[in-house]
Image (cartoon, rainbow, N blue to C red):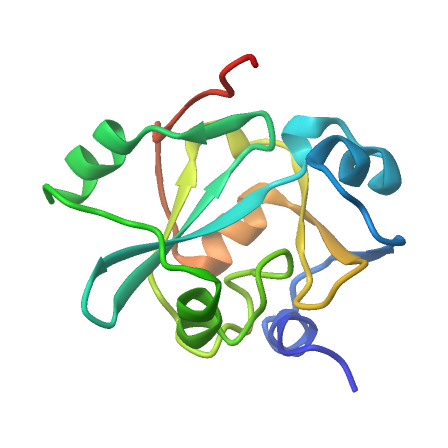
Length: 156
């Protein structure tokens, strides 16, 4: 039985391809396993705005959310990230598998502007499986707001 993400993509008649890979321990490993560059491994981050009010933020793999930019875009003063149990309750997906496609609640989506015009990979709702999809088609299907909401990944 396909994951809810695959069911949602099929129902929307969006072209995609599945990329299957083994367990990965980092974003760089995920990129290598998927045969893509790190920026094309998109992180789907669940952000909490308030009690039972969340959104998805899609960021390139080599970038992090800029909290000041995201707060300004949303016109709020406070945002947080739910813990693993909260993310599961909000989306129906475990961390590491989260995607806006087929989530248990269709929360709003914000996509970083750097995703446009490329093929990206997203979680497919289960471990070891990703969706490769045209970013512009995904953004349109999700009705995502596109904005500059990230900063470069800090060096360690």
